[in-house]
Image (cartoon, rainbow over all chains, first blue to last red; front, side, top):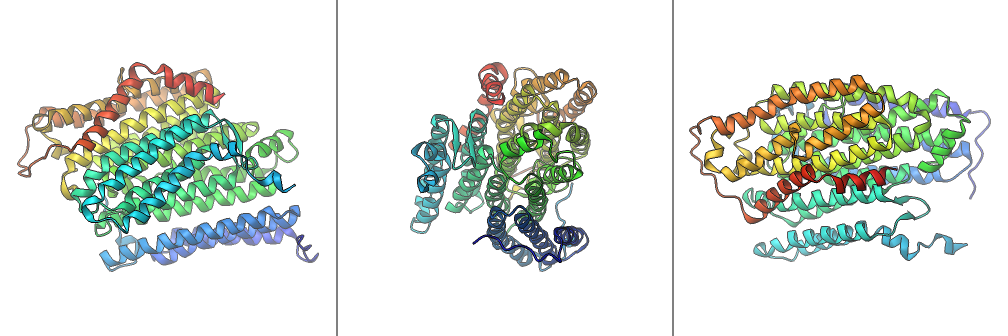
Length: 108
Length: 482
């Protein structure tokens, strides 16, 4: 099925601006948040911004490969989440905390 | 029409190393469930055989494209594939004794090492940004688990957590850059991107610079280049020592392969825009790595900072932006791989159970207790300094020669000054090992097992061979980098 044309009222640049805002929010969340789960969610937000960008460009270029890339990103993000949550769980088991500043035993 | 999409036998042959490693890795996971405890060594032997078969398949693979131009199997790809598989083989040899000592000798470890190497092989041969991303993630996800392999050890946990968070953060940057490149050039194929930028239709827009910048940030995290090096010391210090050896070599070599393919090849027409950034990054990486390494008292942390500094030297070669520069980077990464895996293998042996003895003072008098191992560590440290007759000397020599050929006089001078600073902290370990009396340490130091000995001596032989007869590897690299 060929991609449907965008409604003329919403310009492409709005989608790209939204994705840039989402990506920046993800970066800020990663840097500013102190809870490990929230930090991890910020990374997922960044990946979703990437997906939005891929799909926007895919519409703009009238091609489907951008859609397929976003599926790849989703699959990989799911695999990453599986491993990441397992790692976070072992950290919690050993330290009883999810505060990122308290996970800092490695020093000179 | 459909026949065009069915891969030919030659294309499968080009993808054979990855296929072999995936099959062997899956087989190990499967056998792990059925084997009794004392038969587990079979799994490490199986993994080793898989890697040997993979190296053979990579060397005999016919050159050319595969899967609609997704993979480019050329000399460059073959070089890096063989390099990461050889590094993996040494890591397998050096880790089984460590895992037995820590009571974690399970099959998953070998399967994860193989899966990580599959990802690095795909990165080495990928000719397409999405393939690069998938290879990077296959390699990274397996490495995150490896970094925290001893899951009851708090240091391992912390290492895995930091590696995972910063690694995924970096991947998101890389991917955002890929998305913008896709939007600006309409393709993710490196050859098409190269042509699109060359034709200059939209290559002058700041969009391309931003996209290239995002990709560079993502890769700079992976190669631990300053100012994105913050995770490296914690990760390499906290991970099990043989795994640290692997992480400083395999993923880094593959990330440099990707960096060279994307920036030196595909982005060659906008080199005036990325070269100053890489120049600054190379200098900052060398300085940060070497100056911080001076202050360390933990040998694993010191080797971690040293690995940051070495990434800086390779960035100098990337900065040369020429065939000789790429060849110098390839040779340097090969020499560095054997040297660093060897060094971490010796450290994992001297650290003993639970990695209790990793302070530099703990190495006092080891030359009297185990002169053989101490001599091997000496070879590795001399190679890291860059003393003649070791791989490190020719590696640095070719890099600075390539930099001078590209008129990077200042970077060369500053790089040489950096190697002089570096000599101090490597020599400090030698002084402690040879000149100081052994301390109060009552714990006995057992002799290394046959596999570990083989890994250490093998790495040392390769370090010396590359230092005495560099020609055969360098010739191959020069031909591959054309």
